[in-house]
Length: 150
Length: 204
Image 1 (cartoon, rainbow over the protein chains, first blue to last red):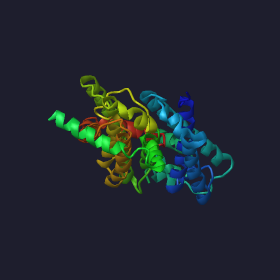
Image 2 (image 1 turned 60 degrees about the vertical axis):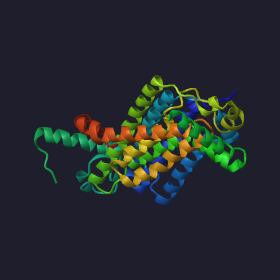
Image 3 (image 1 turned 120 degrees about the vertical axis):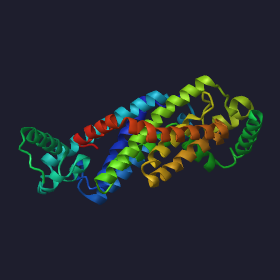
Image 4 (image 1 turned 45 degrees about the horizontal axis):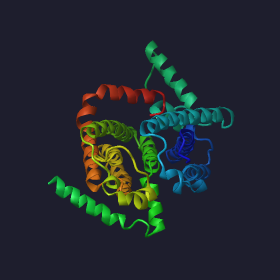
């Protein structure tokens, strides 16, 4: 009898989280996390990714009436797989979007505004690589006593 | 008193189980809702969305605290469920009433082996909703929808008694309250360090 496998759950979570992260980036204008800088296109693709992930996992080959009615991935394993897959999806999203910012979308915005933002919202103006670089540069400046707050 | 509760529980489950097989649409919906993956993953995706939500820094901080509280509540609650399961092993409806096993439970879900009381799915979903509610009332109420639907579907599948679901919900809510009011203020420094670390990595 076929049951839900951990790798299937892993793929499902990976696609759904990638879609959700793009949806978040679009809704909160986190341009540094976007793959495509067109709001309607990203919105459509991210929702499509989430819907596809759910369809693929639950409904393809009538799985809801067969596989889903038997025990599969155990609770603790489910939790571990979910956490690791979410972490991987987040890192993959941040790396791909940073590479896209570097090589495809050349940054046009100024850097004044980003200095005032903390945390993930700095991704509104710069890529993740750039945000990390700025964060560590700022820390080095403050360690050396040369940092001037805005 | 316990006998009366079991009697009421059994009559409710028997009444609800009469609906199984009447409408294929309803059965299919309940199969999706009772599923081990559908609502837990949906709730986790909602938590991920809440983590990045907020117009300004204070609002974002509040939302992130809501997610932290929800996540810690889920973990703590699962621990409390395990402890309760080891103290008191209560049979499932399909074990007390074997006539429900094939036409009801196996038609919607599958016969699970963990003890019935308290319902772990009810505890999990209510802990998440109540944890978020402590910091963000609107999203806490939104998360109450899956919190009610998942245990309801399991009662429909004769996997849990209503009292198991209510017990799980009370456990989840109390855990979230304990985490928000006692645990998080007491461990303010480690929580703040964790959030600061994520912010430095630009993911929080």
